[in-house]
Length: 215
Ligand code: B1M
Image (cartoon, rainbow, N blue to C red; front, side, top):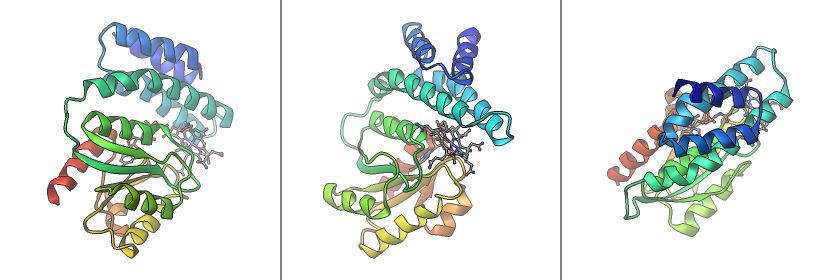
């Protein structure tokens, strides 16, 4: 199995969507847990590219190709992740999106997929979402939770605007606001008054369940 995980990492580093897709299919055929394929195969590749970009060894086109390859793999794995979810009743309604100015979608989409697999009804607004849109959608669908993803230190500030807008609209404390994304920390979540933070998709599910129990 290590060979397969190595090949997955490579497909991201080399930025090859078709190869990443093929390997994701192979993983499913071989009975590999799709989350395990992400965690041990594709994610190490994404992190490698991120580090290379951070220290100037890689450039924007590398980031773009890696993102496309990761997206292709997740697209193949998503239905199986959802299928493996066991919950039948709706656990809660979540409005989810990546904050305005930020177009990173892969982590947010993974969070949405796992929430769906765990019985949550997810309204995914996509990327580059203005704070007021989170609020409008939450009111429209009667959301229990709002999830805001941010991958850039420059866009994290938008998470605070969502918390403030939720307060202004009188949605909280009934509606919880959860935040996440690579630069987001527990301290940041506390500073902006969010109801919770998680550093990965599985943690986001656990957090969402905790926030639902709180109600
Ligand atoms: Co961008 N990028 N990028 N990028 N990119 C990062 C984030 C960066 C860390 C790379 C680096 O410098 N090392 C850096 C940010 C630096 C900073 O601000 N601290 C960066 C930069 C600088 C940029 C640009 C500004 C580059 C430029 O144009 N000069 C630009 C910004 C564009 C914009 O948004 N306005 C940019 C663009 C892009 C692409 C479009 C090319 C592409 C995204 C493609 C796409 O999404 N379709 C891209 C990519 C691929 C990355 C890296 C390499 C990978 C991101 C990713 O998909 N990770 C990234 C480096 C890295 O993270 N290692 C980088 C995989 C994903 C599964 O993880 O998104 O962290 P992640 O999500 C996790 C958790 O964070 C958490 O759970 C997820 C699953 O475990 N989580 C939540 C996420 N949201 C959550 C919400 C929750 C709870 C948990 O509750 C609601």
